[in-house]
Image (cartoon, rainbow, N blue to C red):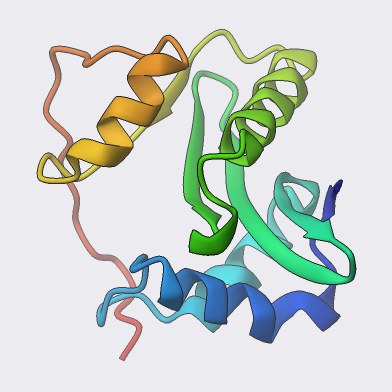
Length: 139
Protein backbone atom coordinates (compact mmCIF):
# COMPACT_ATOMS: atom_id res chain seq x y z
CA UNK A 1 0.00 0.00 0.00
CA UNK A 2 1.37 3.38 -1.04
CA UNK A 3 0.07 6.76 0.14
CA UNK A 4 1.11 9.45 -2.31
CA UNK A 5 0.08 12.78 -3.82
CA UNK A 6 -2.52 12.82 -6.58
CA UNK A 7 -1.27 12.61 -10.18
CA UNK A 8 -3.26 13.80 -13.15
CA UNK A 9 -3.42 10.21 -14.43
CA UNK A 10 -5.45 9.40 -11.27
CA UNK A 11 -8.31 11.78 -12.11
CA UNK A 12 -10.85 9.35 -13.57
CA UNK A 13 -10.14 6.67 -10.96
CA UNK A 14 -10.54 9.26 -8.17
CA UNK A 15 -13.88 10.45 -9.53
CA UNK A 16 -15.07 6.86 -10.00
CA UNK A 17 -14.11 6.08 -6.39
CA UNK A 18 -15.97 9.15 -5.11
CA UNK A 19 -19.00 8.01 -7.11
CA UNK A 20 -18.88 4.45 -5.70
CA UNK A 21 -18.52 5.84 -2.18
CA UNK A 22 -21.52 8.16 -2.60
CA UNK A 23 -19.54 11.39 -2.19
CA UNK A 24 -20.64 13.14 -5.36
CA UNK A 25 -23.39 15.73 -5.27
CA UNK A 26 -25.08 17.41 -8.24
CA UNK A 27 -24.01 20.87 -7.08
CA UNK A 28 -20.28 19.91 -6.93
CA UNK A 29 -18.48 19.12 -10.17
CA UNK A 30 -15.71 16.69 -9.15
CA UNK A 31 -13.42 17.77 -12.01
CA UNK A 32 -13.71 21.38 -10.86
CA UNK A 33 -13.12 20.31 -7.24
CA UNK A 34 -9.90 18.57 -8.30
CA UNK A 35 -8.81 21.54 -10.43
CA UNK A 36 -9.43 23.94 -7.54
CA UNK A 37 -7.44 21.75 -5.16
CA UNK A 38 -4.56 21.46 -7.61
CA UNK A 39 -4.41 25.28 -7.69
CA UNK A 40 -4.10 25.52 -3.88
CA UNK A 41 -1.97 23.12 -1.81
CA UNK A 42 -1.93 20.38 -4.46
CA UNK A 43 0.14 18.11 -2.24
CA UNK A 44 -2.83 17.79 0.10
CA UNK A 45 -4.86 15.81 -2.41
CA UNK A 46 -3.61 12.33 -1.65
CA UNK A 47 -4.42 8.85 -2.82
CA UNK A 48 -3.77 5.32 -1.68
CA UNK A 49 -2.64 2.83 -4.24
CA UNK A 50 -2.39 -0.92 -3.82
CA UNK A 51 -1.06 -3.24 -6.50
CA UNK A 52 -1.59 -0.56 -9.16
CA UNK A 53 -5.18 0.18 -8.14
CA UNK A 54 -6.33 3.43 -6.58
CA UNK A 55 -8.25 2.40 -3.45
CA UNK A 56 -8.58 5.54 -1.30
CA UNK A 57 -8.43 9.34 -1.41
CA UNK A 58 -8.50 12.38 0.81
CA UNK A 59 -8.43 16.09 0.11
CA UNK A 60 -7.06 18.20 2.95
CA UNK A 61 -6.40 21.88 3.42
CA UNK A 62 -4.97 24.34 5.92
CA UNK A 63 -5.87 28.01 5.92
CA UNK A 64 -3.45 29.12 8.64
CA UNK A 65 -6.06 28.71 11.37
CA UNK A 66 -7.75 25.33 10.91
CA UNK A 67 -7.30 22.26 8.80
CA UNK A 68 -10.03 20.47 6.92
CA UNK A 69 -10.60 17.15 5.19
CA UNK A 70 -12.97 16.34 2.35
CA UNK A 71 -13.44 13.41 -0.01
CA UNK A 72 -12.07 10.81 2.37
CA UNK A 73 -13.04 7.68 0.46
CA UNK A 74 -12.02 4.05 0.69
CA UNK A 75 -13.12 1.57 -1.96
CA UNK A 76 -15.89 -0.52 -0.35
CA UNK A 77 -13.99 -3.76 -1.02
CA UNK A 78 -11.05 -2.40 1.05
CA UNK A 79 -13.01 -0.90 3.95
CA UNK A 80 -12.57 -2.13 7.52
CA UNK A 81 -8.88 -2.88 6.93
CA UNK A 82 -7.44 0.24 8.60
CA UNK A 83 -6.80 2.11 5.34
CA UNK A 84 -8.99 5.08 6.27
CA UNK A 85 -7.30 5.28 9.67
CA UNK A 86 -3.83 5.25 8.08
CA UNK A 87 -4.88 7.88 5.57
CA UNK A 88 -6.18 10.13 8.35
CA UNK A 89 -2.95 9.61 10.31
CA UNK A 90 -0.99 10.80 7.26
CA UNK A 91 -3.24 13.85 6.91
CA UNK A 92 -2.91 14.68 10.60
CA UNK A 93 0.90 14.34 10.44
CA UNK A 94 1.09 16.52 7.32
CA UNK A 95 -1.17 19.23 8.74
CA UNK A 96 0.65 19.15 12.09
CA UNK A 97 3.96 19.67 10.25
CA UNK A 98 2.41 22.77 8.63
CA UNK A 99 1.59 24.14 12.11
CA UNK A 100 -2.11 23.33 11.99
CA UNK A 101 -3.50 23.38 15.56
CA UNK A 102 -6.92 21.83 14.89
CA UNK A 103 -8.62 19.79 12.21
CA UNK A 104 -12.31 20.28 11.39
CA UNK A 105 -14.30 17.71 9.45
CA UNK A 106 -17.82 18.15 8.08
CA UNK A 107 -20.00 15.03 8.13
CA UNK A 108 -23.65 14.80 7.23
CA UNK A 109 -25.57 14.19 10.45
CA UNK A 110 -27.35 11.22 8.87
CA UNK A 111 -24.06 9.41 8.16
CA UNK A 112 -23.77 7.44 11.40
CA UNK A 113 -21.21 4.98 10.04
CA UNK A 114 -18.75 7.75 9.15
CA UNK A 115 -19.43 9.59 12.41
CA UNK A 116 -18.55 6.38 14.25
CA UNK A 117 -15.33 6.04 12.23
CA UNK A 118 -14.17 9.53 13.23
CA UNK A 119 -15.19 9.08 16.88
CA UNK A 120 -12.94 6.00 17.02
CA UNK A 121 -10.10 8.22 15.77
CA UNK A 122 -10.65 10.65 18.66
CA UNK A 123 -12.82 13.26 16.96
CA UNK A 124 -15.82 14.71 18.74
CA UNK A 125 -18.78 16.84 17.75
CA UNK A 126 -18.07 20.57 18.12
CA UNK A 127 -20.87 22.76 19.38
CA UNK A 128 -20.99 24.74 16.16
CA UNK A 129 -23.18 25.12 13.12
CA UNK A 130 -21.72 24.89 9.65
CA UNK A 131 -23.04 27.55 7.30
CA UNK A 132 -22.44 27.69 3.59
CA UNK A 133 -22.96 30.01 0.66
CA UNK A 134 -22.24 29.08 -2.93
CA UNK A 135 -20.02 31.72 -4.59
CA UNK A 136 -19.36 29.93 -7.88
CA UNK A 137 -22.01 27.54 -9.25
CA UNK A 138 -20.63 24.35 -10.80
CA UNK A 139 -23.39 24.09 -13.38
